Length: 270
Image (cartoon, rainbow, N blue to C red):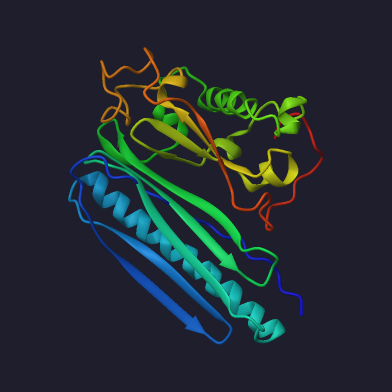
């Protein structure tokens, strides 16, 4: 019996200062042929950033679980109960947390009978923009007049060039990343980690790399008075010297995610 692959998603979070992270709530839903487990992070602080992060994290986690359940029900209805139960696990990790800045990374894993489980990631970053809580975009982190995508793209490509197995980068076939490929990220106390689109691993030879960690000091144009102020601030060394030993690449357990979007003609940039 042929079952369609399911696209998965995931999240993580890191504790920085005083915002409280309560015990996580676990939701387990099960029916004939499938089981879906989702962990809901409980952010118990009462600042405006906490409140927005809590609401958005709950909505994102619910959507992860709901999307899998809808997919699983359709598959079972169309093809019958699978020999091995479909399973789904959505796990959040706090990567950064303070009263004014919260970041999470979800790791979502689905086992739907393929050679390997599908693993995908989702992120949430909430901070203050002009004094108001906001779900952050990459542009929110940079000074006015700085191109955030170009800056991030350059930093990521430079890091990928350090790995000799990134054939398409080494040979100049992948030279630039578009907004959709650098728009997903999570924050830590010393660096930003970009979550690459599965297409990077599937369509380009980057040897299973799915995340690239870049120290804040290696990203020119970050705004120390913007959302990153709680960890960058003035006089905290940004732009003077690296705050961590260096950048790093994260390699997925499997060289290529078995579910990925299909793109058109291969070009020098996406």
